[in-house]
Length: 107
Image (cartoon, rainbow, N blue to C red; front, side):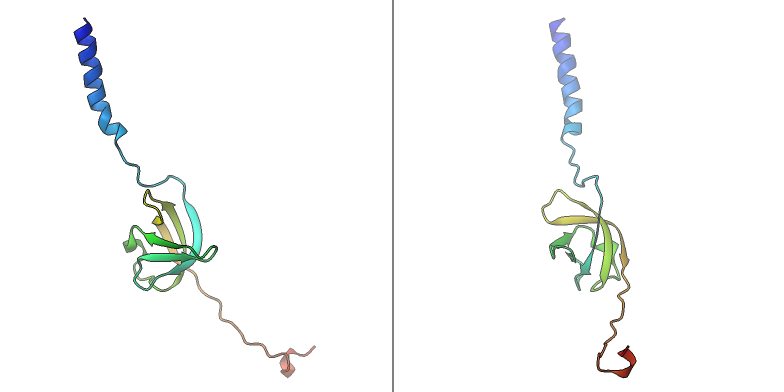
């Protein structure tokens, strides 16, 4: 009887080991951030804290290299690396030069 119980527990432990060893390489929480994508598309610099992140899936940012973008991402298990779930290019507003001495700006 003891051998059967021991055998059952060892078989149960054998089947449970792969489940315990699974690596969840992505966190469940997504984060929104805006910043600039590098020219090679492998890194991202956030506007808020100017932190540089390595992109785990650079294919998600194809044709956005060098642009200012808004990303939705999850942190990966590797430090300083993010997994991008969605991205969109932010249209930058053109800056208008104002000259207070110009007659069009006088009250």
